Amino acid sequence: MVTPVQAAEKFPFKYIQIEYSLQIDDHSWDPLKNDFQLFRHKYASNGLAITQMRVEGKEMLVAQYGGNFISGCDVDGRFSGFAPMFRLGGKHSDVIRCSNPAKPGETGTIKYSTTSSFSGGILTLKSQATEIKRFPASGDIIGWDAVDKIEFQVRLGGGTCKVVKGTYRGERKKFGQKGYAKAFSNVTKPNCKVY
Image (cartoon, rainbow, N blue to C red):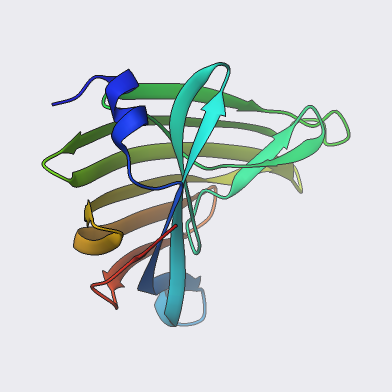
């Protein structure tokens, strides 16, 4: 295992791109049938980008990926996209408090924790994020609870990149209404791009 400083010096990339397919199963309540209706959405091409970045004086990895349930929220009235950050060779966690003065009663919290390691030329990233979102609607409070999980392992060396493992799992459950959705991914190409 390498220290965060050593990892920053030894990581042979600035940017990694991984392609994967995504399926979302959306279960919406049908009051006429008194049952859930399944709407299946398939996306043949989605992407995960892993970038090295300096955040508050520390070297971090940032993972941005498409199709996730937790995309971000308003912070002090301005939308801020969510992307989990990884401390090089260690653990990291953070909490984002969502707020918008123009939308009274709307609340939200995003919490996430990540781990990363780089050993034997294999970079491993794991992340779990949760979101609780609530807002008033016609006298009720509605919203959703969501979970996003990613786990990626890539082998790096000689300017090449190969996916050892790559998964995204997501769940979202409506609050104050009936309905839920699940998402999962498959890596479509074993080779990833490294820059």
